[in-house]
Image (cartoon, rainbow, N blue to C red):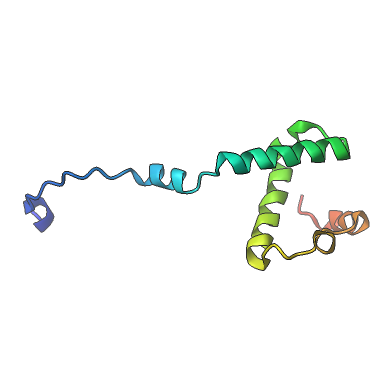
Length: 98
């Protein structure tokens, strides 16, 4: 029998499971989600894109990268300086792994 098995203290506190704690710690406030939905509507209407663009894996990877850059450099980044021109993007196509 190990020392922990010999221990007879009974805790009356109930602690949440780690996955429950992490899910609540990482949850996004409903007001933030609503703000994002509003911006999505404007983006889709302005650029004539389907609403389901936000479900695309590529779009989500793009957003994840933008979030990482924002976390690293803060919100003072000029988005026009950050986003590449379409021609620059096109030059990167041959570099993509197949």
